[in-house]
Image 1: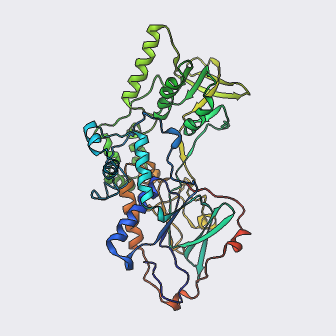
Image 2 (image 1 turned 30 degrees about the horizontal axis):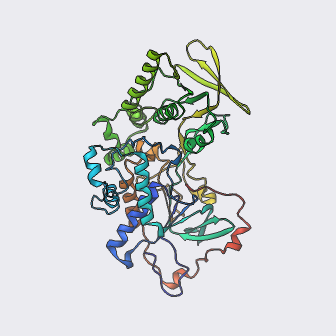
Image 3 (image 1 turned 60 degrees about the vertical axis):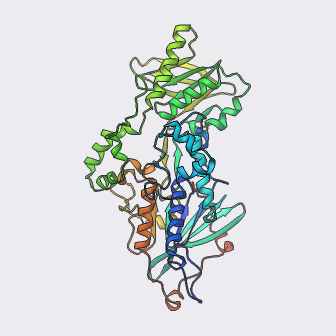
Length: 463
């Protein structure tokens, strides 16, 4: 699609992807499969930038016995293309574990295994990605008042590179969420850093660790820390009576179906809110029932034996922390009586979830051309394209941050394979008719690194 004639403006990518987590890896795979089908003349040219030095997905939570909460069939490709060579089953075959997995009779692989699958898949399309590149600016390229291209500037060390695109796909992921006023430190963690931070506790014999939260990650943290530090007291603090089980029943799981995106997108706002209320317990602040049972069984056993070190402080809220050189003081307030208890701990772990990256944060002046609704949220079309001024001809697509328009699967793996197929279809449908040399002559060339260096003041993020 981006083929030009001699004398044209410099080669333009049909698509540039910002971030190379699972969603944009799936996007790269969809592009690769499309290009293999259609041949060079109709191929879609694309490139991705990722700030990490290599592929990584929630590495801090790759606990050795933690499993996925979605079926392996909801991998990067299968729901879009069941015959794909990039499927989880093909990965298992390549690793010599396909028969073993089948004999296991389990739909839910270990999380560490699925991460290895992601790495395997990413390595197959790594010619399309530049790792270690952080996006620092996105600038419009105008001709006759119309924005036809976007120049994307990325930094790798001291080097700046500029690539030009007709479309962007933003896969900038999620950001760890902490309570207002609480800062992460050596003793105050977010669970996304668990495995990296816990190494620093080795040999220190912690006496007490406090875990805040009532969702799957919080429960996994409690179980892992209880096992990892057999002398430590592990205190779980949450505002409920106990962990609530995730609803993964067959009918409720229909909210993750591809067709549910169409229904949610067209539903009135009040129905959207009701659907989220009805089925939020399929994903938010809920825990797998097997893990709930294991934790309760362990706590009861300790009561029987008189060796209680697994404590559940329920109907309570952590209302403050004081970070000291040797300990951290956690202030726990009962929601029933208002009584405050102070716990001295070696570490406080906040398993308080994530928030989507601000979708327009990287776009600079281009973001001013994107539309928001009356609640300040970005307006997104059904094909995951930002609604923009008509003068902005470039497509800007979101992978994440669309829960208010597309529903609960916005930042989940369940619909990834279908979503990237829909985005690719939109890019193909909106592709311009190839222009001749005369029409392209007035489009300015991308700026050199030296030209952009003086205007790059801040550093963006790409996840």
